[in-house]
Length: 302
Image 1: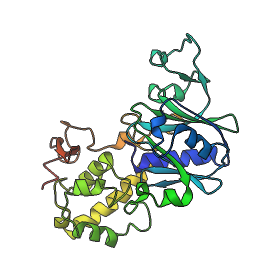
Image 2: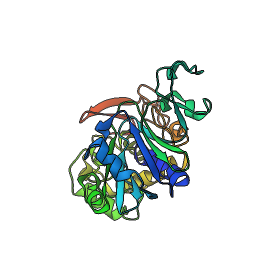
Image 3: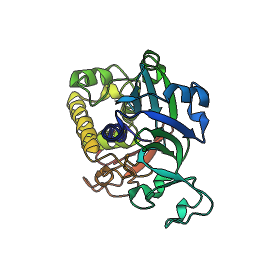
């Protein structure tokens, strides 16, 4: 699932491409995306509106529309936005990549990064007034798409989130209080969007490895010096991941259809069975609350 760096990468990429554009039309083959409206009601909400801004709240993307409306999108597990031009397949249309042969929409150019097979699951298209398209590629069809009045969206449960770790509100004192006032496994706490928004499986593994903290450690038992290290590593790793365009170990691509580069710098995520680059121990995977946690039991002692 795209986490804070991937969503931030998407937001920054979209700002450079579609702010100021009007939405002329909408196509989808999966109306279940629209959680609070029918397909026609959703179209009525967005068509004709101008995209005046794009913001990130946790893992949510907020498209600020004209007439005091907001389009909220959570890309969920396999979703990512692309900007370009696609053509609807008509009959047999040969493409050099066989994985595209059964897809409805094909990039107009037929070449380049948009032809990455991970970009082929076009489920939702917004037609813009410059003849470009804003498309959602989403293999699993889990994304959430909501349009509504600005006040309604901003006060919705979707945005009832914890502190953003890249905001000025994420001070050491705030973080220390979060940990000391709760007795939750630290891995679970870091991924709780109601407490700290934006961190998921990838970056919780990475920051805990950097701070040498076992993922099962109760949050209120972590000593202050370790809390300080963990706080700084959260900021450092997330900023670095944003700078490198996020992590693309699986589905994520930026709005140009390009992989993020932070995957080259991962220390522990999806490194099961490999040697720890710090101490030589073996990276281990365990389940915590139904989610995987990777860590080195030799240098991340409980």
